[in-house]
Amino acid sequence: MTDLYIPASSDTPEVDFQFSRNTLSLSGEAYPENGVEFFRPILKQLQSHLQSISGKKIEFNFQLTYFNSVSTKILYSMFELLNMYAKANPNCVSLNWYHDEEDDTILGFGLDIQEDFTWIDFNAVATA
Image (tube, rainbow, N blue to C red; front, side, top):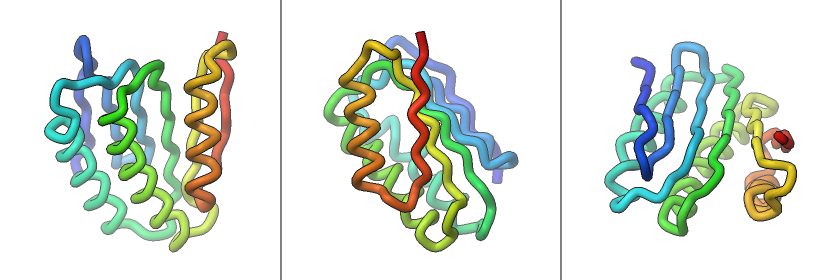
């Protein structure tokens, strides 16, 4: 599978999905005008990749500092795909959740993810 890189814009995050290394990264802010249109091809490629591998460890580095409600729904879909993969391949998905140590909102969302997607190994990483 070809790696996927989309540079950040004023309202979309940097997407750096290195499928060849099973390292996925989202960073920046996500409040695109049409979130479904922006994220749909990303979700499709992620789903295709997860269906093509088995037992491979995946590292997801989540470094969004802001995301709107539309992005939140789509991110849940992304985590659902990863959780299903992790359920079939225990201990294979690590989610590194980067958050400003003073940003309780981003951390709170991450803790919700940890609670809802129990097959994913969740690691909260505070940044200054």
